[in-house]
Image: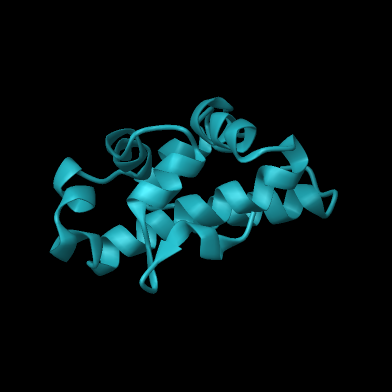
Length: 116
């Protein structure tokens, strides 16, 4: 899936991301570690923090989608699969704690055949 399909007017769109993952914008906000206002108010959607978190979720889902065959399955993995080497935390929990780069590094290492 292309990251461009998650965007609208040059920004990551909570509505488009939620639609593609067949969830609600509120659920997407929770899984990204954002408050409800962050995805409802236009000024908050444009904020650096909101855009960074939406980008992180989109990047992680996009990176693992080929492994799982669909964005829905990748989103299920993101939300529920404990990651080895992360004290049993999921990718979602890592993103919510501001550690998306660690998740992306883990995915890259796993894709390269290096076990975490």
